[in-house]
Amino acid sequence: MTATQPTLAETRDSDPIIHVRDVHKSYGQVEALRGVSLQVKRGEVVALIGPSGSGKSTLLRCINHLETPTGGVVQVAGHVMGYAEKRGYLRECNQRTLARQRRSTGMVFQHFDLFAHRTALENVMEGPTSGLGEARGAARARAHELLALVGLAEKAGAYPSELSGGQQQRVAIARALSTRPDVLLLDEPTSALDPELVGEVLDVVTDLARQGVTMVVATHEITFAEDVATTVYFMEKGSVVESGSPREVIRNPVEARTAQFLTHISAARTATT
Amino acid sequence: MTANVAVPSPTKRDEFAPLPPIKAKSRISWSRVLTLVILLWVVIAFVVGAATNERLDWGAVATYLFDPRILEGLRTTLVLTAVSMAIATVLGVVLALMALTKDPTPRAFARTYITVFRSIPPMVQLLFWYFLAAILPTITIGIPFGPDLVTFDTNLLITQFAAALLGLSLGEAAFLAEYIRGGILSVPRGQSEAAAACGLTPAKTFFRVVFPQAIRVILPAYGNSLISQVKNTAMVFVIGAGDLMTEAQLIYSQNFQQIPLLIVVSIWYLVIVVILTQVQRRIENHYSRGYTRRTEKSPARRQPLTADSDRPREVTS
Ligand SMILES: Nc1ncnc2c1ncn2[C@@H]1O[C@H](COP(=O)(O)OP(=O)(O)O)[C@@H](O)[C@H]1O
Ligand SMILES: [Mg+2]
Image (cartoon, rainbow over all chains, first blue to last red; front, side, top):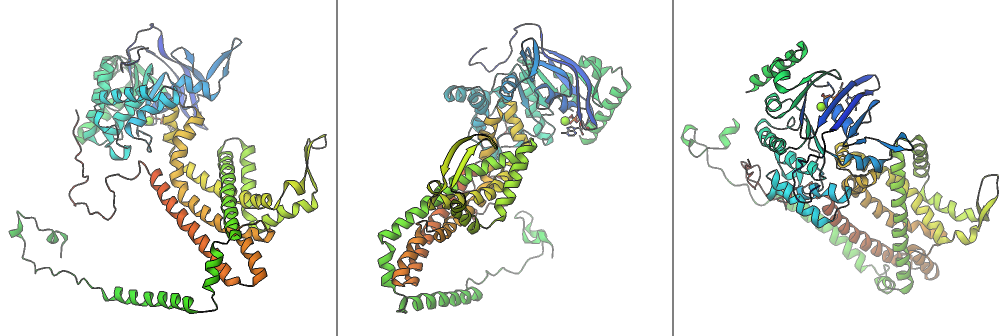
């Protein structure tokens, strides 16, 4: 891994960086995921679309094990998340190992969730220093670079409460990149933003995609998905209904439910603009 | 009358009917002057009465204020407060964490502990630990129904000072545990999830992200507890633990100058509490980092109605 360049584009091999195998997740009676499988290769940008409650967030949170799947396994960058191999068996691993495994993913949340008691710079330094145990000096230098990358170099000293929603989400993107993850997981990164702030965040995400950062993005921004995604998955009721290139899924959906969702969402869009 | 009449726009002033000129409110508020006079009279009457009454022996107050025995008692009071609060804080954090785990065993233990120790008056606890030595001459640590490992002589183990510490800290821990638990719960779950997503272990997440934010919520209640604890230490005079109150009592039981000595004691408690209040304010300011906008230094400063922030929000592409 390169030390100073904030770009993540690296081609180690052609293996999928994320391999989700038949993942199930239930909350009591609610089945949030009913056997989802997907593969993400290095440099791919996967868009998850689908109605609210279809399981997009749950899938993303199962990938980095913020939620433990009730069935199936997730492999990220080679390791089976939440497990460690011991004498030929996979056993549930401890929290320390899980924390290390999570470092191959970076996550951007719908509601930003920046550390409220830390400045923008400190937010971006927290993962490298407290998580990876890097020296503060190096972490600070890199945090400044990442803030510059998202266009917020001059906001380094600002607290989250002093930033607009769009600025907070861009800091959150810098924070997610700070641990040099193999893949970025974004859960509806613009859903909580005022309409005029959506663009600045999507621009940053688009830039990262162009630089070859691997990502999985849950989104309702269909135009963005069409422009940026290499693969689109349409989810409904905890299952993947349809997947393929944006041209296939968004332009010429095979499944009636996909087509219905797309007309519904574009109608909602034209109604607001 | 409509609200927009009050804000005449300079460009369109002519469209509105002219208003009568506004006369500034009188600067002298007679009700305030009356309040001032009454309260000033109360205070002066009290101070003069206290100062001129010969039976309140102010000379004795001055003599005993810095009496070596009193200063020794003051030292003990401060040590008792500091050590008992330190024990109570550590124990309180442990109990709060036990109460918050998913594991039912520590949760039940914490709940029981908190219920029991919050219910028993501190004075009773104090006497309990003090007299424990009388009924249990030795304390043995060992395997139940099995061999003994260590045996202590209770009279040596539980000195007056130790009994005072136990009585003051075990009950206090139960209260602090509840404040700390509330503080931890007040930190949104998204904060710890974000920390976990950044690769922080649960321990790092707690100490770097959750606890610093919980402290902000805990501090006001904690400060009050600390101030109560300073005063609670006065109870230990019943077991003669050598605090400020014990020393004062020892002196006035010989010379019968109860009132001057109680005034001496009151002055010292007042000094301690005033200092602690200042320290508390400083610490609270420190931990409100990120929650108060630093541009609003003084809350009294008026912001113009139109500007939503005094720093322009820049546009970045
Ligand atoms: N923590 C939870 N407890 C119970 N049910 C949940 C929880 N999280 C999600 N769900 C349920 O799982 C389903 C999928 O939710 P989610 O993954 O958030 O969907 P999406 O992100 O696509 O809107 C929903 O029915 C939701 O109510
Ligand atoms: Mg969601």
